[in-house]
Length: 415
Image 1 (tube, rainbow, N blue to C red):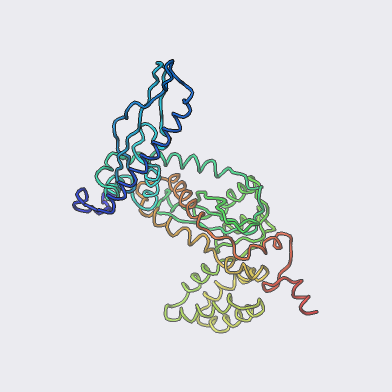
Image 2 (cartoon, rainbow, N blue to C red):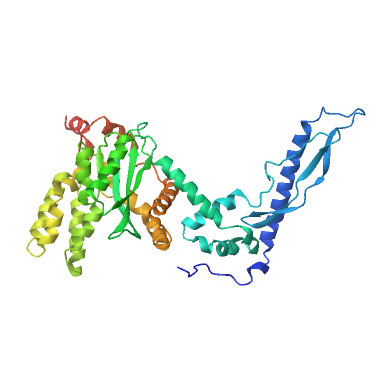
């Protein structure tokens, strides 16, 4: 854990970069002009405040000592003007752009927690900042990260109690995200639920700790969602973990179930030798890529015929979830790409798995949840709206679909 992953650049403090110097000088001039404009506006408010001889009572009075503001392009020197009132009253000019005692820009302050989240540990922070902005960064304490981690914990506590009854939730994706952290006899995992609302917006609904994705752990998560006002979703997507489905049957019994084809494919392939895995995988693709449910059923039967004699475990693994693997055919075809797998969770948590692996020696259970929450918040901003979101209203109102097509449309075409 003492090994540093930050590479020192030799001679960083003496690097001469004309472009960076030009940018700093331009930034200095712009900041100074903005401060002067602030001062002019401030003095204008005292325009009518005159002495007996008609002179202005509030005037400029030199500058405060110069100070460097740390920015992403290094230190920028600023001078903040002073004012005085000739009538003896206390009048102070405070720049909104450069408040008193500020030594670094907000963008640099915001960079500290994200450096930490993306892989730079607290102990490496000073070295990382030195590489980014030079030796002047030594005045930036990594304790900022420790303070912000506490803020993240407070934000997480508020978020996990937020109400969910202001929106209608149509689909859920659920999965357990395992970390490098351990309880006494098992790896700890975060139980994660993502939902899509009637407008097609995906949101994290739950990030809770659990052990082995047990039924009790998932039951607590789902009961909490219900207590926060979440309606009964139309469909839940997840892997074959029995804990989640058993809990779903108890808490949201009317929600239909779709098994994740990505997880199922991996489970089936684990039951056969590597030499035949490409052939097995192709046969599985022919099932879930079939145009209609009837064609998928035929492909299921064909898979059984081809492989049951030699690989009965693989066939059993596939057959036990046969009905739940084909549920997506009863929903709009525009949604199939999202409904067949838990990819919305898997793709998001690639970075998170990497980060918790890097930090497993210095993270506790709550710290892991807070980190996942903040990285999840960051990921949400880049999520696209659900493809075919205009069909979600039909799903909510109970419109029936067959092979991805609205049944009413099928009947009209037949007529």
